[in-house]
Length: 116
Image 1: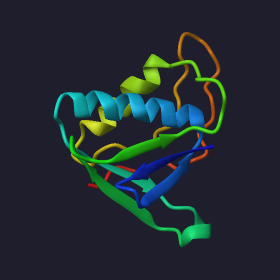
Image 2: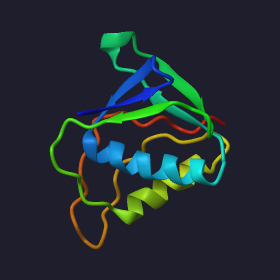
Image 3: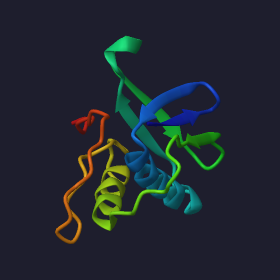
């Protein structure tokens, strides 16, 4: 279980495999100078609800991984996450789609549906 830490204060635990895929999408958008919203559902242990942060090229972001090995990359998942990041509602975790017939991994973070 890894952590996404935003501006030194806001934190959310995300499974390492999902966090790697989120990092790839976030990094690509920031390299292009594209700010966006990133939303997630909070665990009931921290009060529940939903958190959204505005991610921009000047943001201070830390990705903390607890596993020793880097997971393989599922390009279909990167594309699915990039699609949400480019939408008006911003980036949110979606379930991992199968890539080349491989079984999808599991993400332990709830998805946040798009805001209409």
